[in-house]
Length: 418
Ligand SMILES: Cc1ncc(COP(=O)(O)O)c(C=O)c1O
Image (cartoon, rainbow, N blue to C red; front, side):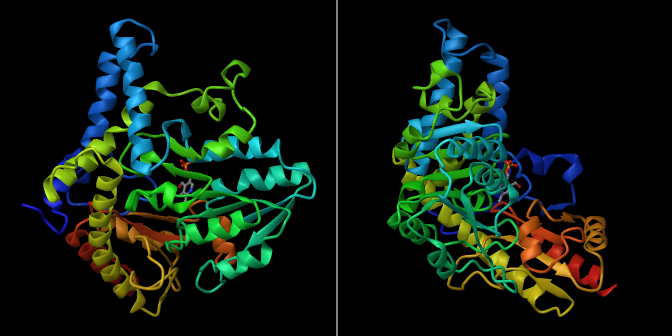
């Protein structure tokens, strides 16, 4: 029978971390730093190391099997994201993927070309390209957030776009502000002047696996280890751009699409296990909706909707509580139902108590979180918040329960009222 709401017992049964003694009686609120891995991911990694831990793609059994597992991951992720297999690049992390990408752009940017970056990004999406733009004599333009709300207004981009704009980098959702940016609209504006768009989906994908084709991004990146999977970064580079970007790998691999932008070489086991999280998504589909069939993109979209509906209810409960206090500055939208969706990555600045002390108080009450700048130094500076003081961040995902939220709300009240 179909279920129109996410069944948490079923969801959590797929995550062994909930059974780990270290997590007993605790609520995990640091998912934006790295999520739990689902059982399918753990089993696939373990099975690779047990059964096929050899150089892949030779003709003998375990080697051919290893290669087939790697190919399956790539194919499945391509289907899930609505792109071609050859457009999927697995790299060691998103930071490394953007670093390599920036170096590739550095070879095609010319003096006088313009690059637009935001100050809403995690440093990984702009640091390397800022340095490279300076090195090649390109002009860097910064599309800035509203200093009070952290909102990124597309009008700000339209003022900066021009005939020399070659590249725009933007987050799908900031890891501090949490608000979803209108990527299709941004891409359409950038494409109208012939610019490419690099989208950091790291804080978005764990909540809703995107249809990258529908977004029209030229590059879409996210971190699999924050998406219930292995510690790798996944980068989609659409084929037109992939061909245009100079090879960053060994010269003899220039025609191998997935090697052009990964000079580190593939981590075989992790690539082979990377696709297993999609088996988890299909298991959820089977339980809640029915047979997922062969349309993986469709199944991923439907399960993502279930995730989002569940998360929205919990997000609003936590936001209500934080918004009602006058001793915290909540960053980003105060509810999920506004003009733009809000992800459950909720950061706030406590006004009377040091963030570090608040985080410690929360941890003492079973709320696993932390404080800091989360590598979003420019975002905090743009909001007038001292990055060294930082903020407290509570980030959660679809496996978070109403009881977890209740624990966080009670703990917050106790710590802030103390
Ligand atoms: C929004 C965002 N972008 C990029 C990154 C960098 O990802 P990685 O750790 O895979 O390098 C992070 C990491 O926290 C992030 O939150």
